[in-house]
Length: 276
Image (cartoon, rainbow, N blue to C red; front, side, top):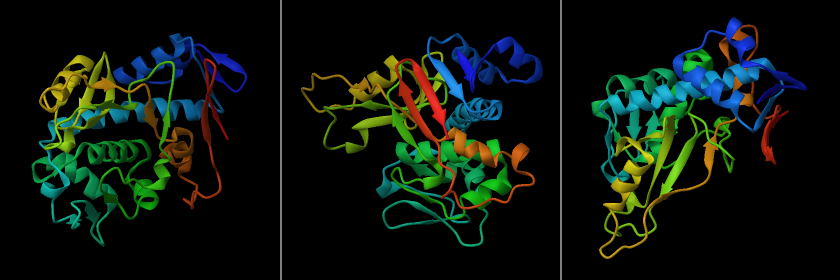
């Protein structure tokens, strides 16, 4: 069920005034039919979350088809036109380069890139934000990007939560407790939930839950008996906070430091609250 402030919202009402893509409709229908109550402070925050979730799914699929390879940090590579490769194997945005342009290049010229799965997830998030708030607002919000080992800008405000259900656009993690010490990069896999029991897993592909586990199990140490498994948790950016930078609502708004407005996501019983 979806609730805006104190009022329940019916999906039929929303669909009449709100054009939806296929994946956005799937997300909204899942939320509306859920036994969980999703509570939002405004309709705009709900719309933004559904929109950005859809873009997260699209970005994950597009990264898969971009030609970007999986690589350890030692063997990572990037397009030197946009990025400086650090000695640790991360990618630092070059001075004078627009952040959105550099991020979009990963999807346009993916064969020049290779990186680890944690980096892939941050790339997916950044691309989804560009598509959600526009490149100009993205450039103001994320002026100094470093892509490295799960490092991300604080403006993403990622939170790991346990929930009764997970939605397309959620980022989850498969743990591989008996991985081969010779290939520590396969100790686990960060994935994007695409829907229909499919996940994007950089270096593995687009697989079902069983498919990801099978791939990770093939990378265990000799004699291993404990299977890889999906953790019961998900990472979510602060959709409510990011929604203030939506181009539709921010045309006359000056982008400012995020130190002031803070949102909190919490789950109490079967209700997910997004509060200011």
